Image 1 (cartoon, rainbow over the protein chains, first blue to last red):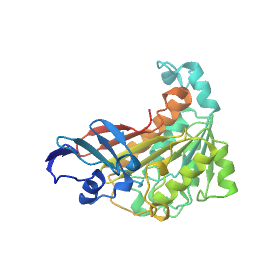
Image 2: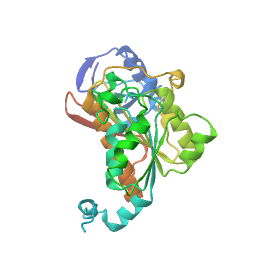
Image 3: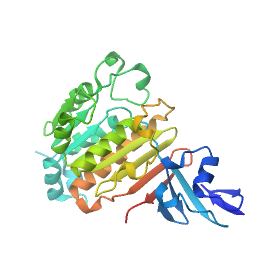
Length: 66
Length: 231
């Protein structure tokens, strides 16, 4: 199935959790916030959510530098 | 004599009342590196009554590309003291205090932060940021976390029960020191400007502070994105 993440289209397998998708991108999901179809979520909100066909995801890795 | 603040007092929603609130406010600025050195002159210039600056770091040659308030002869000087000395001359209305020590979980840090209306975290590691967030949570004060890495600027507005450990659930983060990763100088400065903006707006108009708002700007695409975690 297809989803859009950070404005790019991805072909993903079924039954894929948002947190696993983020990990597959090389990011630590515990340091990310996401917006799923316009709804902002922190890790505890999205850790058990599965992606669905057509989902639009925005992923932000929180940074600490300065 | 001209009022030095007339160009901001004349803003809609600011006024003499807003200026009076600014002049009575106490802002903590933790860190005067790439982010903090952009925020500090704005707080001082605008007439925040008391600005409390913390930094135990010294100026290094590799800081100067983005920490542009310092100059080469200051390499080796403490940043808080150097920055305070420089901006004390910007606005004599402001009580500017420099503390050459690292914020820690002790009485001195707690007491100083407890005197502040709002804290800007402009440090450079999850270790320091989670600690500052924890202290601010304990004190119940507003916290603006401003950070940058690579080409990205970020600002997170916290308080009202929402703090950094609500979004960073990685147990390793609290022990993670500064990483010294690549950073685009304007990314650091923009974070500082955004932090000063949130702090000043919060003082002038308390209800303007959006708890749980996360703002991110990508300097490669010139796009802002706002996440609202708390309604």
